[in-house]
Amino acid sequence: MVTIQTSRFGQIDVSEDTFLTFPTGLVGFPAVQQFVVLDVAEDCHYQWFQAIKEPDLALIIIDVHCLDPEFPVEASDEAIAELEIRPTDPVLIMAVVTIPSGEPDRATANLRAPLVVNLRTRKGKQLILHESIPLHFPLLPEAESAQAEVLPVKETASV
Image (cartoon, rainbow, N blue to C red; front, side, top):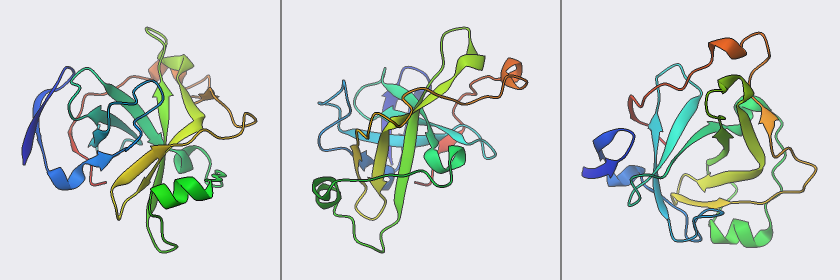
């Protein structure tokens, strides 16, 4: 176990086996390359994507298949090679969630720039997809939006 410092959750212990490495970083954060996924709660689709060495960098993420079971990801041959994806490898595809301050009913997921992770190699890459894919996909139907809230972290995810 490794203890990491976070600004949202304080010090937390995580297994190095759960680290995800993004060799080219993320859009806007090219130097930040190691992350861990933290569960919010057992029955929650949302998770935290916490940078290992940057305590202030934690993003809310959601599996894109929770939003669209047929989500089309067309990764380039270069991205597939970079992630060392084999046909039998389990691959996780996550979207970064944005929740405007004080307006959780306007939460959206960025489907145009998903985070793709090869779970066998623990390597990831943020893809930039065709502009026809939504940059701001609304998450909550209007009737449910008043009840939305972001919950604190509960435990390290099993990704």
